[in-house]
Length: 130
Image 1 (tube, rainbow, N blue to C red):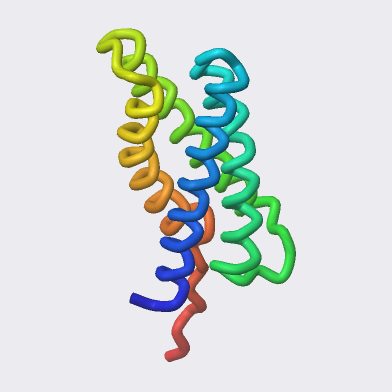
Image 2: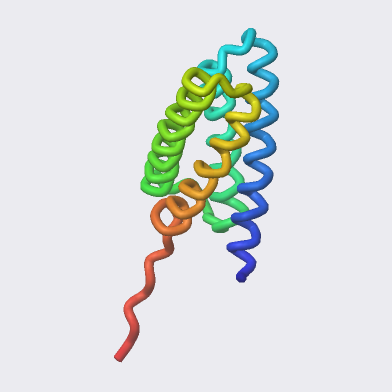
């Protein structure tokens, strides 16, 4: 496993902690409204993750609009999956909203990792010389 992979995993773990902490905080502040808590914590988490991954993990010199659009598109997809899972687990199965979010994070983290690794920050290979 290379340095870039280790950094990506570190940022992912850090981002999961930041996102979950803000989700828990917003659950408390917003009287258990998991939808608003998810929206606000997701915005904070996505911004946090993009800044760290862009500069530290993938060591970009600046901010690339194409990568940013792809990055945020992956997070729109993970947000939709997260929202569906919370609805299913909290509203349908009547699970505790913090436990439900912890379960949803497992799946959305995997989706996020592969989306960013192979799409958002995929490095273009230089053509090989003959």
